[in-house]
Image 1 (cartoon, rainbow, N blue to C red):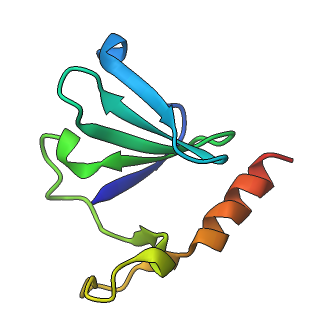
Image 2: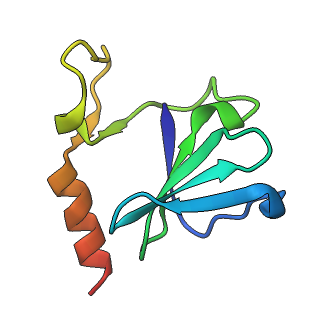
Length: 99
């Protein structure tokens, strides 16, 4: 589960973070010490999808959107209503921000 963040990202322990270009439009960040996934970033934007587990207290956060919904397993579904973004939606965001 990820938390969407739009803005300049400030991260403590930057020396321990490695970035991997996972596609032409995005990169993933991992901790080089333990290998944990930290976030997914749409390159050319300030859109980040942060791993929820990296925060100490998430009980007051709202789960409002899902990404790459067209790639999810059929058995995977959440009960609450969310904004559902497909791969095409994500690419449109990237293309809009690269102009």
